Amino acid sequence: MKFLRHFAALLGVLGIIFALALVWKHTPLASLISNGDRQQSGPGRGQPQFAGGPAGGHVFGFANLDDLAQSIAVLSALIAGVVIIDLRRRDRRRESLTRARAIAQQRIAARAK
Amino acid sequence: MPRHTKIDFWLDLALLISFVVDYSFSFTGLTVHEWTGVGLGASLLVHVTLHWDWVLRTTKKLFTTPAGREKLRWVVDLLLLGAMSLCVLSGIMISRSAMSALGWETNRDGFWTGLHTTAADICVALVGVHVALSWRWVLTVGRRLVGKGSPTTSPSTASAL
Ligand code: HEM
Image (cartoon, rainbow over all chains, first blue to last red):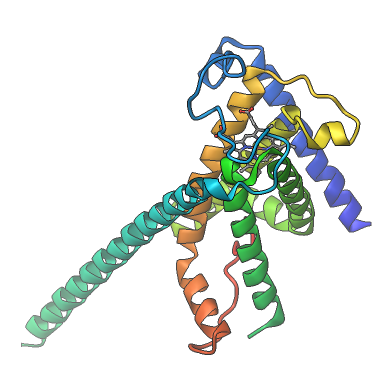
């Protein structure tokens, strides 16, 4: 019962997202992402290249492993970038904590004198 | 290690691999691409329904919690949910294979195609950040699963892919 209630709520949210996309489609802002002449015109990112024949006809174009390799490379680079930023931030935090602690200890020592 | 942590780990890994494969359109070809996308969409439906309480709680907390790592994680996860929904919905709108196999001829146009590829690119960026923000958990559980390191619990958002 709870599952069905939550499922219905989720469908409602998806409905809203879809309705917003429909509204977007009918505003001038649609041209921001629209790919109007893509179906008719020449190559580019949007014209997927199929090595193994017609678009619908093959299962896994192993000749296009490059595409998979590229996706893995992009994702790995992104993950590495964020992890490096995260590590740097943590190091900086540690340093400032250590510095703050040292200053506090100096003050305590000075007061004790 | 708790059973659900193991399940989270393998489920997340399976979702991540399916997503990367599905994103590689020229590798999968149209038919596999569409059915994998439909599968990802269905997993997303079940996954989010099961974690609906989390979605509500997190959305509320966004407005009450000060900025920080946790908040960034929630924003990324909620954006990922929205982008993934748009990607699958627009994919269905431009389907040439899966939907016609189900008896529905779609009316493809440039808007939905553009939305689909844009949402897919945004998803890749968000998936990268999502995984990266959990890298400590991924490393610890991964090590544990291959027999090294100590047990840990799952991060609150570990399986929100
Ligand atoms: C999370 C799921 C999905 C991801 C990440 C994804 C990603 C992509 C990407 C990156 C492309 C662009 C290929 C290129 O221009 O080089 C594409 C194209 C396409 N996708 Fe998806 N997709 C997903 C789900 C779906 C679904 C569910 C369907 C339909 C049932 C679908 C149908 C299509 C079609 C028909 C194209 C070709 C568009 C064209 O003619 O240029 N996709 N998808």
